[in-house]
Image (cartoon, rainbow, N blue to C red; front, side, top):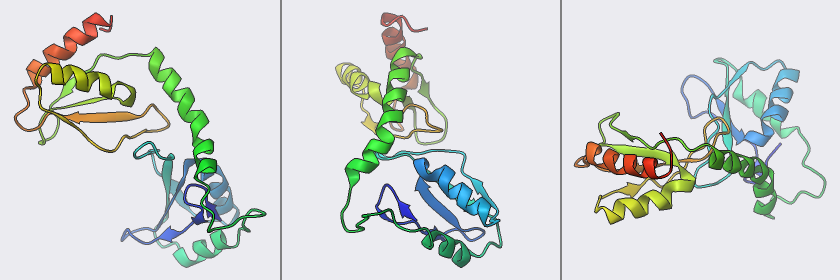
Amino acid sequence: MIDVTTRKPLRVSNLETSTSRIDLAFSQLAEVRRLLDEHGIRYSVGKFIISLNDGPEKTVIRLAPGTNAAEVQAILDNVPFPPGFDANAADEAQAAKQVAEPRDALAEKECTVRKPLRVSTEGGAGPFIRLPASRVEEIQRILKIHGVRHWVKENYISLNGGPFAAVIELGYGGNASAVQAILDRVNGEQGVS
């Protein structure tokens, strides 16, 4: 079976000590589940769908402990390649097309629902702002105007098919309450409460 995002054969990995896993494109989840079910393979599906750097949505299937990874790999390898498939011809346009339509619909949904931005102080890495990826440039511009030191984490994430989210880090010395006051003014100007 071919991974539609990499155009290479889908592989079972033994990276985890307790179980093997299959990392795959979300668009292939139903097909792989059907295949595993037909062969009586026990598994669980990861709770999240993740997309890094605006790439294709990926998920994971974890094989039940004790499952023979080689047997599962043989099942995947027995799925014939699509007609005319050339593993050396990278067709990223096709992979992009498979995920573009759902992503466009999510972006449209994101634009209609604007939640107020909040500074979080969870964890020990300093305050941060989690926000829709579509608002990163706007908020960066506002933070720069106010002289707030910050950086944007390089990976954008989409969970469970939701809109892409980004994180702006304010660092250990970041003043969470001062930045929240700035965000409250932005939220008020945009009619978000």
